[in-house]
Length: 164
Image 1 (cartoon, rainbow, N blue to C red):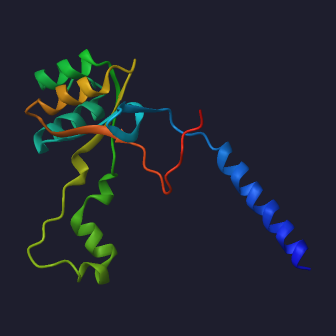
Image 2 (image 1 turned 120 degrees about the vertical axis):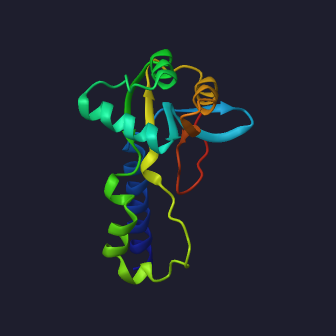
């Protein structure tokens, strides 16, 4: 009996490994040898100012993106061939009052005076063709309408070694 259960465990585990290998992984690149975290190729995350977010949403609604009416940002969108921009967090996930209404018990744990971060102003930019991500990040980070810019790092539950 013990041999049979070990055999089943090996088959189940082998099947799980094969199944996980079948899922497509996003193409990743290393930004530099000093940065061990893989990042999605051609994707940058930016957090913009509140006024810039309003301009981006208006342009998306009107179908005029990449033209937002903000000259410096429009120039960057054109220079780096930004083909898409999308919110990282859905609007309903960033509304503090809606979250408090949905989770009233958890909301009681919020310390008095705590500020909820505004995640609704974080966007994923898709660039085509993929330029030098460090250059893109530096250019967007230096724009006064952008609060922060970073690679779209690929998070994994368990570190894995690269297959040569």
